[in-house]
Image (cartoon, rainbow, N blue to C red; front, side, top):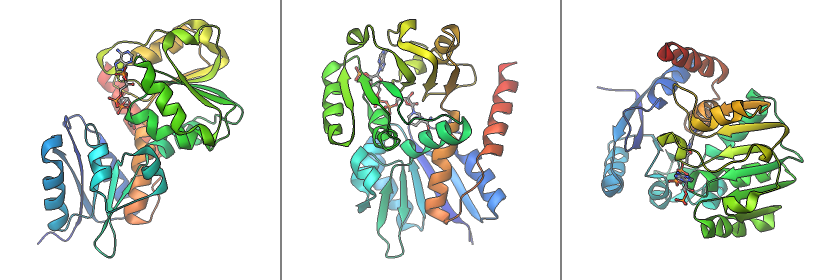
Length: 280
Ligand code: NDP
């Protein structure tokens, strides 16, 4: 009989997922007895697969592309941050058997920026490239840091404008197309487009980066992404990718499930070491 509490990440594709490895280390580190697997789940079979998983005693799920909106709809109850982002990357069974949906992506990003990279967002001029699910999930946690302004720029302009409108009562936030960024300068440029995944870049000017400006790509890979390379070539103070965010959002999910917060720094160091080996 398997007495381990069962967790999994669902998504498509999922073979590349680092989540099982990350949660295995968290479990060892905190002495938790659990199993965490990765399962390829297409959108069309998400709800039946999730229902079966929970009916068979599964305790929690992470959901990644393209399932976050479906996971949000599946949850019986949502945290405020999941409700605001209309997406859930974490599902957790509650004592009464109901399923809680949460979104730990934004919190993971902010923890990576503030704690791991010692950056401050208060008063910062922030540019978010992209207006998809990831952008939606990071807006409120970023606004909570009291930046001077947030501009969302997107290829499909109306999506950026609509997204900014949804949050304009929470701070200074506007949406526009890439062409309207001329003559603007930012202290932090976040790439939340999926362009990096295909080695492409949104149209960017070096002049967008303020002195000591920071670039951060939510995407990550063994090799530096096109956006991380752009940041380096244009003398960003730091040009970072989303590996730290990945580990931080996982730690927050682990905390939701197990009530114990794992240490993220050793895991980030290990993943960085692994990818530097993979590059050679
Ligand atoms: P979505 O598919 O929801 O949104 C994609 C966005 O990228 C859209 O705004 C789209 O614009 C834009 N886009 C796609 N291709 C291009 C291009 N060639 N040029 C300009 N814009 C483009 O994806 P998500 O929001 O879910 O994910 C975005 C990124 O964030 C991914 O790389 C993902 O891996 C990463 N991510 C990382 C996490 C982490 O833990 N590190 C967590 C969550 C996401 P349009 O609207 O015009 O189509």
